[in-house]
Image (cartoon, rainbow, N blue to C red; front, top):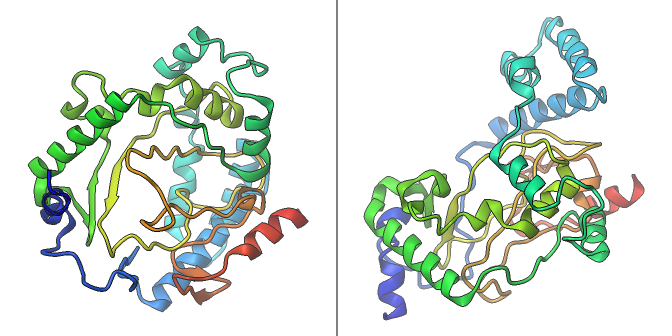
Length: 291
């Protein structure tokens, strides 16, 4: 198929009519907030980070949250969100299908050999690891076709942000009727990486197809979590590259070691100032090394 025609199939979902002529200009807007709103969100997330880091157990975090809730100017949205995470019936889950799969794959043992020592060291040191090709060429081709068809079918209903074709929770939708997308959350090497970081007791959150079109891929550095974490990790993300990721077409940016700094680059604010999309984030790595 003509590449231009293939990209055009994504236009309704991306809410655009054509590809911009100037692809060097960043157009992506992560959130539609003004500067004061961004700073207010930044301050709330700093409070949540402080409360979560006040203890190493849920009981200690609950005590810190209760103390915060008692002050006059406590933010109710902060209290409500952290309360949701700390309610006993919700913060521990029974054995799940994923945990069963871990047992069947021999991943219950922390010293399993599914990942090499170098790969585990990379996760600890850098916060990420390249697991290499995990899918066959046939699987990748079938996934591309499935996503292309789903985007075309959903059209504007898949709209997320301008210039981005996106489908939410792909593995629980009918588009995964035959299990084609199961490796996205059940591949043994992926589960081994998750197990190394989170242990065996965990919850599958979801998987999303996210496809920025040419000219709309320049996003700010962010984390997919709601506050900074200083000790044990709370979430693991996996990026599946079913198209080539290169410097020329816009690869995902990461800051190696930033997971160890306990900071959270919230929205588009850095140190209280609105961030330029090309901001140098090496200070996060320096903070991680000092810690």
